[in-house]
Every structure is written in C-alpha cells, then in structure tokens.
Image (cartoon, rainbow, N blue to C red; front, side):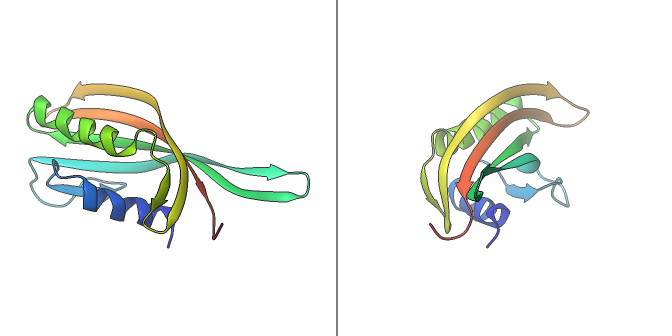
Length: 126
C-alpha cells in the first residue's frame, strides 16, 4: 500500500469533524465541511552505500467549511491525531509528523484553515 493510501485510511478512521476527506481536490457535490490533503514535496534519504529507506513528505491539509469555527475544529482534530505521531499508520511505520506552517482565509463560499506537515516514514518493511 502506498503511503498516500495509508494516510487516507488513517484520516478516514480518525477524523470525525469533516463530512468527507479527499486527496488532491475537493469532493464532488455540495459539502458543508471537508478536508483535502495534497502532497507538495518529498525527499528520500541516502548514505554513501545507498538509500536509507526513510522518506520525508511535505503535505498540505486544507479544512474547508461554511463556518470558520467548523474549519478550525477540523484543523484542531487533525493536529491532535497527527502532531508528534509515531508508530504504525495503516501498515506504514511513521517516524514522526511535524507542523511546518499554518494559514487561514475566507474564499467566496468557504472558510479555509490550512496546516502543513512534514511526515517522515520508512519505505517497505523495517
């Protein structure tokens, strides 16, 4: 299973404040509150004798809602389940998850609360 799939499965099981969760783009149809996550950058660690099997991916998580308080609740719940996470995430061994930035805004229809995380995990079986 890819890490994106592991992350999606983990979020789907643990986020209760959003109507839906999707990767990369907003869900189809009218939603009052939802979470979208996007991979924005990634690096792999290497030593002189080859790859170390550790990967660091930067993800952007956008919480959207018609009310700012709902968007904030989604973001806060995400922070509770990801901040300093270590261990098994649906079959992937995560070494750590760290906030690297936060942002908020109001668009035409939705409030948006954004938080970015760097997630470090091991590729394959450790």
